[in-house]
Amino acid sequence: GKEGMQAVQNADFAIGQFRFLRRLLLVHGRSNYRRMSLLVCYMFYKNVLDRFCQYALTSESGWSAQKYYSEVVTQLFNVIYTSLTIIFVAVADEDVPRFVAERVPVLYRAGVRQAVYTHALFWSWVLEALLVGGLLSRAVTEIFAEQFSRGLSAPSVLSLGIVCQSTIVTICTLRLALEVHAWTWPLLLVFAASLLAWVVSLFFFSSVHFAFWQEWWGWVDEVLFSLPFLLFTVWGLTIGLLPKLCREVIGWLRPDTSRRTRYLRTARNQKHFGAETRTLLNSKPHEPQWALSDAEHGAAGKGAKLLLREANHGFAFSQHEPSSVLVSELITSTSPRAHSAESEAAKAAAPPL
Image 1 (cartoon, one colour):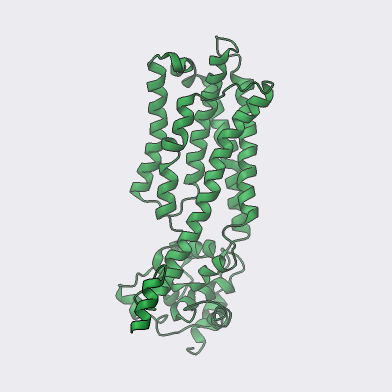
Image 2 (tube, one colour):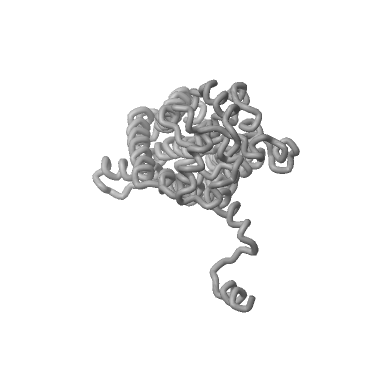
């Protein structure tokens, strides 16, 4: 009516039908919350990691304002080398497919509880960057200071910075790659192009002599293919990625609903599941087996009743029947590897809701 039209015209945004709200919240809203959390943490991570090495050199050089990085690398670090990857990940990454996120409203609970982005998570990224940056800057000084024949002049200090920055660019790219859940060919090409852009820059700047980047001249021949550089790169990547691997171990010991759902979607873990659970996890909405499955008709057991009783408090669209089947699996499992055959039998024997 007229009043509704006036309200829409004065609103910041509006939806045509109420049913659109389900996908807006459970799919796009949840995904946006996850992506923005990763975006904020990663942007601080890569810049703290990059700048802390400069700060470490400044403290060791008597606060003399000696530059650690070449000016051209400093300008291109956030423009080319580490920008495209986070842009694509923050736009397109999904921890679970959209149709699963829409069918399982309990996945939305992490946003309601503000569990995806926390102060503890943010500061853990910052502390990780400080630790890795401090170890890299110190190791570069100890390993490569004597390798440069030009002594400890300003160009040699900048050459040490090139070694450190080369490892930092690689660590930042691979560290973000470990956060990706949905790999696609475009995303894979973007990550490869980012690393390739750094390698091309090394060869180009090293082969062209200009007065304002003398530290680059001959760097590739002198350092890039040397054994110390290769060993240092392997060590640096191990140090840089080890915190993420520790996070993964903790995550599997204390899994959240998203991790449980991803685990349940793997084919080798579905041999004990009922047909309705497999349909919920794998069948897309337009496929006939989804429309005709037992899950669509509400065949679920005690676990589903627990879900509905719990999810009805504070969740829009929490009475969607198919979502109850999957979360019954999550409730009856104490760990992502634990699944009880008795719970499946009880679910099959239970009367419809």
